Amino acid sequence: MGKLEIRDLNQSFRKDDGSDLVVLDQISFDVEDKEFVCILGSSGCGKTTLLRLIAGLDTARSGSINLDGEEIQGPNPKVGFVFQEYSLFPWRNVIDNIAFGLEMQGMPLNERSRVAEHYLDLVNLSQFRDNYPTELSGGMRQRVAVARALALDPVLLLMDEPFGALDAQTRNMLQKELLEIWDKTKKTIIFITHSVDEAVFLADRIIVLTPRPGRICQIFPIELTRPRDRTSVEFAQVRRQVLDLIGKLCSIQ
Amino acid sequence: MGRDNQKNGKNRWLGLIAILIVLAVWQFVAAVIIHYPFILPAPTDVFAAFVSLVHRGTLLLDLEASLVHFAIGLGMALLIGIPIGILMGWNQRFDAFLDPLIEILRPVPPLAWIPFAIIWFGLTASAAGFIIFAGAVFPIIINTYSGFRGVPRVFVEAAKMLGCTRSRDLIRYIAFPAALPSVAAGIRIATGVGWMCLVAAELFGVSNYGLGQKLWFFYSLHQMDSVVVYMIILGLIGLAFDMIFRYYIDRYFLKWRIGEVA
Image (tube, rainbow over all chains, first blue to last red):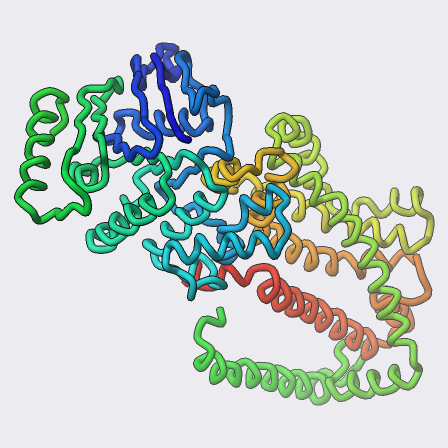
């Protein structure tokens, strides 16, 4: 299971002059089990703040986040996180990076190597098992990061613009691979992006946030059948609809 | 330095030529112009002194004594400096607590501790070790500290998301390996500083052997050629430490950094 319920979430930061900067304002939404949700918004709209709250890395001013009925109160092995920047431990090779979480759980070496190899295989990087992160390209690093997050078999996978730093081709390929992985592992995924194209390609549902303060502006269910073809007419139509509505209603250019 | 191996191989000859030129000029000045070994012994005098010192057979005992002093000093500096650096780098309150104290003690020259070294430890190897410790501990503290301060937040958060949440585990599995390049640089500096303190640490008579002790002993006998022998040995061993250290650390601890700095 991986059902997430977010209710009346508020987050603000104290500014130097003593006033409060409201970052998230009354955010409420649900994410169903095995659903793929994209959160779309321009930079500075609080997307990352929202994701960090769901991860348990920060604490909200008010509101609640429940995963399968349990309140999130800190980092939790049921929640995996793929960071925007490169987060692989450079002193560990690929397989040891993937096995890190299992090692922390005290799993014996043989067993955790076996599990880690399974996830390494899932992201198609078996031949880079013993390489160090500095020897990998950006796309490979993010694939290893996905494998590392999946190795603990979380029910919910949070991804914070994981492909943002990659070139367009690599990015498209990784999106496809991610959907395949999602299909095989059946995780609930919350994926942050500022690209409408990426969101329409990936998501069951797109949640659009307005900037400053972050509020939910629109929620679009994406009904396109999978696998989606980003060059198709239907795809272009949905993308246009989303863009139009966002432009009209959510003050995102 | 040393980025292009092929080029480096050719350029190494240039360095050797410089050494040979200096030896030749030194020989000429000492033997022909000054002609007074007490002021400047010639390379040939030094070599002859070296041969006779080898025959005397105390060189190894001197080396052993010096290494003991050095090991005491550097060992204590590591044992005390690394944990303090870790605590200060990891915990802001501990940093605020210790920082002023360290900033006051740090500028005191290591050799200024000699009187207290004698009073506290007597004329023992520990007294010499203490002087070396006083020189070596601060580079270790400061580099460990800055290494821990510089640990990228994303590593710590990634580790937390993977179930590594206790401070002890975060230090051991994340912060320490991430800070290791900086810690290693600190130890390397400390090795150099500690070795420099050795001669002074041995000059107040803590032992009957020692590279520094013998240097002063032969000076008091006005055997300047032997003094130069010990100077050269001190220099070469300091160099060897640095090379071994660099080779070993790069090979076994920092291999993951290959390619990070192009």
